[in-house]
Length: 282
Ligand SMILES: NC(=O)c1ccc[n+]([C@@H]2O[C@H](COP(=O)([O-])OP(=O)(O)OC[C@H]3O[C@@H](n4cnc5c(N)ncnc54)[C@H](OP(=O)(O)O)[C@@H]3O)[C@@H](O)[C@H]2O)c1
Image 1 (cartoon, rainbow, N blue to C red):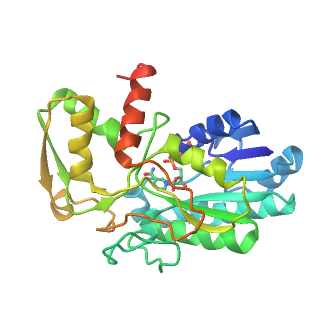
Image 2 (image 1 turned 120 degrees about the vertical axis):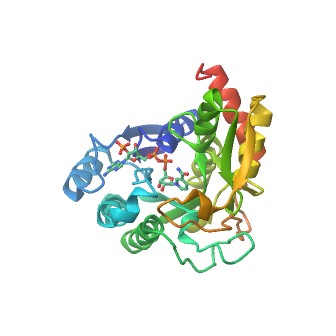
Image 3 (image 1 turned 60 degrees about the vertical axis):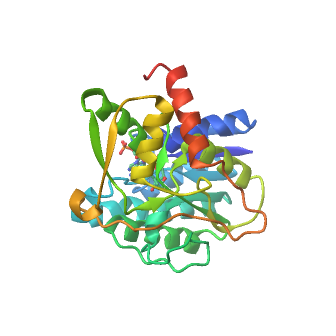
């Protein structure tokens, strides 16, 4: 198959490019400068030229706190932009994969969210991502909406990298204990997405690491696995004071019979740390 990846220079986009190539697909990728998802005419021209079978939209506004004061700008990319990509794909009869987030949920369920659960985003970012899901579904019948969570990978800034960097000049860090989720290694997710497009099970798919942890527990596991001496203090979200509210519990699970299940978050972390070491980012 021929795949076209938008947001190809981002953390997930890079791994999707590699995973798709490894699986034997022809893959072309465009970063923001070459292909802006907020520009429908540019998308139309590019897709007419490339004629992909599947478009994988990894482009997004991912600054969760920044979106609180720039919701319209975030919506232009995450909401309207996602719809533009799906519509341009439909015009060339390509299928669309759109990546979304656990932040479409409010976290009040108290158990892992499945595909049929009702979204109720707490933040501007979550609202724009939910709008994107709806725009994608409306614009292209052959859509896969893949909700994932807490991504980390070698292609971008992420929580694990931040913890390791902080530990270089601090002996302790304070991390929130009252937000629980399923942090996911982008390499695992990328492989899951490539497997997904080999089938035709359209609709929403929850695809995050198996298991769940708080950011506090995740930080402890990071230092343990990386064998770094750094004490982790636990604080509340209120004490941390981020601009955007986040769900207290947003682990994801799938109710699909043929769900693509990813390895655990601990395995994802081990894989990521190994990859960082191999690529010399330590
Ligand atoms: N990161 C997470 O924890 C997380 C969790 C759940 C779901 N997700 C979702 O996973 C997907 C991938 O996220 P990621 O972590 O890989 O984010 P990322 O590293 O920030 O990548 C997003 C990419 O999109 C590009 N982009 C921004 N605006 C664009 C535009 N108008 N046109 C084309 N490209 C544009 C960005 O380019 P610039 O850098 O130049 O702006 C960046 O390269 C997103 O849909 C995100 O919502 C992420």
